[in-house]
Length: 132
Picture 1: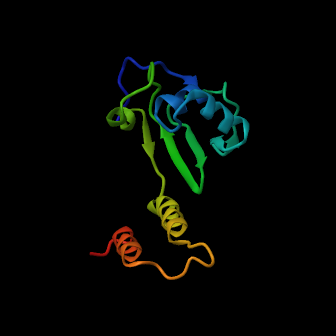
Picture 2 (picture 1 turned 60 degrees about the horizontal axis):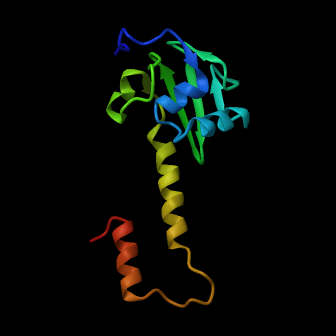
């Protein structure tokens, strides 16, 4: 799949990450780059670095290590449905499963001394775990 022809050949890394909805705001994307959570072709990248089609981007978001390949650079923030026109996501499904598992484990933890779960609590836990 190729990027639309109206896209520029390169863009700032922080702007590209924000435009493709990997970060909610551009300052968050900039902070992630400065903290070393973003790599380009295996090397830690600064926020002002230009990204070009064909480059491999690695982004650490919590427990998930995302792997992306740049296809193009949008002029501005794009709709969620258009993200696939500008990058290919090569993140293995196991990475997303790690985040889901941690989220469920956090909900299942009970504070010491709270006793057994109530019937309502058990039903909510069953619902979270995909039971009936």
